[in-house]
Structure formats: structure tokens, C-alpha cells
Length: 184
View 1: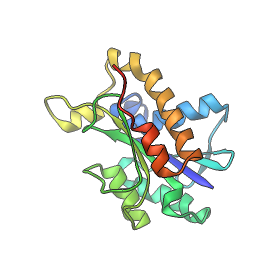
View 2: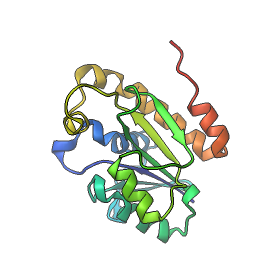
View 3: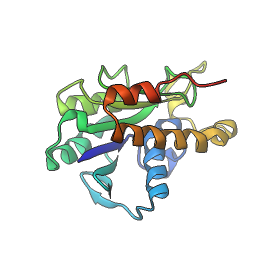
View 4: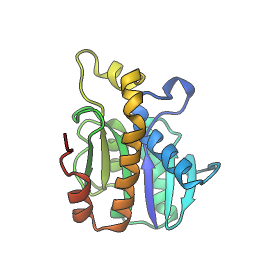
């Protein structure tokens, strides 16, 4: 069993904010796979998808680890069975980066997951937000611009492909495929 957790914040005020890219990714997978309505389980919204489970923690971003830990324990998983999808200011908008492990890099949601699981060895898929002048909080909690929303379907399609790659290949091969430089 694999767990794919998309990080975000509940509430309509956070819909289509940059910080909810993980949630938008799960919503996209649910819609594309025709998974229907969520079950409320593990302090989040939850779907079964073949040999994987999809999870949107409802604990707010900074407490995402509580939700992920409940699903992790229920399914008796290993850290490498978890894929965390979240936003990253350090990457250009729409760029994806798959990693097998590492620090939270200042992302409080990922820090919560890593702390709850007690390891840095948790695979993650980062979705670039791009950095802009001004407040980091305003950037991540700001709503997508019309131009960013125009590119969102393509980004979410690439996230879906990356998730499928992670599910079917070992992590090193998946990273090689997902992290290829984008063609201009």
C-alpha cells in the first residue's frame, strides 16, 4: 500500500491559493480517476485508488503530520511508501522536483510530516511557485493569478504523470524521469 498526501489548508478562503497545490493535485487525481466523494478518515479526506490511498489532511498545513501519521500507522507503512505533494517557493512556477528524502527546507507542512514520522527519508514531490518580491506569506497564501491558473491544468497533468511514475518505478528511476529539465 502506498500513501499519497497532498498538503493544503481547508476552507474556501484557501481555495486556489498557491499553498494548496498539494490539495489541487489530489483533487485532480480524484477527478481523473473517477474516485467520487471522499471518506472522512485520518483527520482528512481520503480515497482508495488501487494499491494506493490519497489523503488531503484537514488539520491545516502546519499540522499535516498528524493526519499522515494516522494513515501511515493504520496501513503499517514504511516511510518510503509515502509521497508528500506540496508547494515550494524555491522552484520556478510549475517546475516539479521529486526527491527520496531530505530536510523540510523551511516548509512547515513537510516539517510536520517529517516530525510525525520521525525521519527525513520520506519521498516528496515539490511543485514550484516561483519567488516574487514581497512577503513570503502573501506569496504562498495569495490566490493564483489568471496567468498561473491558465497553466494549472498542464501542471496538474504533469503531477499526475509524476505520481504514476513514483508508483511504478523505484525512486531513483522515478526521480530521473520526473526531474528531467523541461524543454523550452
